[in-house]
Figure: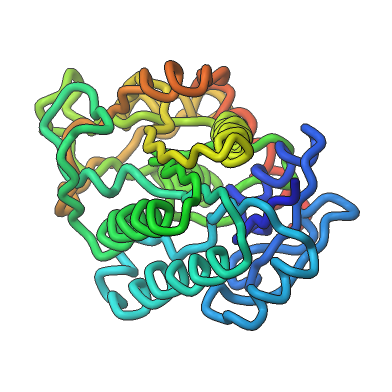
Length: 328
């Protein structure tokens, strides 16, 4: 088995590469390095610098490395940016996926794992979001992920490919400081940046219908997320080897909600700060509560998250301080 991991030099992708290589799987990475870094990859892992929009590169890579399965993580993923640049997001995320699936079908690859997102659900008014909760995305980014799921399942059915769509909730943490998130788009690094600058972390709205008035989210450690990819990819390969192509859609979360204020307080504690957050107006489109039901992946794949929120913050902070100490 050889897995092609697209976007494997990115934050999440490099963790998936780490998990799969440590488990003895053979992998090759395709990444355009627009947000990824080659130095994140373990020694000996081949890197093809290229785009999923380039059919020639895809065909050559699949043939040269004898690719038998694909883990597709390469995508544009900033919600706000997707509103400003919808055509760019649809081209990168949907057209790129189409070209990749064409190459997969032509190359005889028989299992395909797709990186999806809880953004497909939009603003669900439920205590726990199950995989059967209606999908009503509220941004072009979320739309491209939902359209991607449709495309993956349709291609799988038509070409005898086993497929899985993994709907991530809020990802945080790092397996090692070197693999930490370098972006400042998610809550944990956003709070780190404010604290480092001596500024108050921001809470967008404290008048939601929740116990402390702030939004509640489900956070998943990136190392757990990577392990879920390994388990799912192996299950797809098992189905493909048995000649029984199937499809699977699962949430990747812990099934536990943590409020924004609770997260900020815990970040203060772990990082040794004591900066009170500043409450600012709500952001448009932020639902009060989005927490995953994680039962299906446990029953289908036997997977459960192992890390708690404290682990996520501590490991992310180790990466942040290492990177900014070097920068200084």
